[in-house]
Length: 459
Image 1: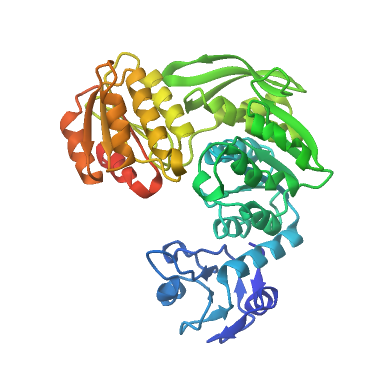
Image 2: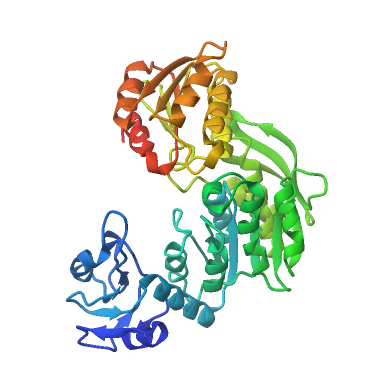
């Protein structure tokens, strides 16, 4: 955050000052929308959520060191009052970018955004000062908060951009116009809110490349026809990445290493170098190639990119997070979110990790699958059986029961159990787990299965 006085911020966002003794008081630290994450010298943005209204925590935020509160009404402590806090945060973020001018990298996709963002940040950090999205702060609140962490020394700003509906990426790129745009894939996540199928998702995701300037780069996944089809929607230079032969940044000789980790030879226009990821699952190859494509567009050589990927570690919780218990049980927590694409990738990765060990899957609903939801859950049940998982525990009524029925109707011998809720799933898993098992926990975030995974891991 570049220092700004309350008066300066008020001018930028069109705010009126309330209960402010010193309009020249400087804001010197990043902003927060969670009062528990306020840092001294920062700004607290009071927003109304489904569970809490930030205005109720304004006094506590100031007591914790916030200089003032960005609010939609007076709150009895120093405040900048605006009509719309969300829009004001965006205006402040755009103002900051105009003054510091880092290279803005926007990335989007149906799955893999957070892992790719984490990999890319670790590659670029070795090269120059880099700020990247924290956790999955990729929406109209999270993106400005990320931008406001940047300062005059920031060279690269890596922004994960989520799209729950058409128009979201147009809004986000209006706050932070990218020079480099990366599109990972088009899947079924959020299809319920975007339309009826992948073409509608592609239309929404393509808003990112439409925002790129003529001297920018669009990094497109050569293995996804919906993504390649976005080439005609941008003025920017196109760089294809993937495992296809036509990709300029690609992987050759992909193989599985110990612990279901993936190794390959990275090929870029600057040469070749070996990569062995410290991440589980063959699907991570695509995420690594996406990060490598961005680094290539920025001028990094293949050896420097490979060194960064080899040194990279998992940064975000709940994404194929592995915990080894003292009794030999391995808990794989992938419960941050779920779509058919990520569920398939996770199940296959866990099967590769387990080898001959006994496997248990604790699976809940995949949200926002529209009319195809029941069929997609049944597909996951069949995949559990086909991969020879020993035990399946489904969580919840409705679509998860289709998963259970499909697995039970197979002839692969999977033992199927159903639980009505997370607490019931935890009781079942605790009773069924044996020393040495590998247990995989996954569902959409609203199901809350992360609590089950953490309890099984002993956290």
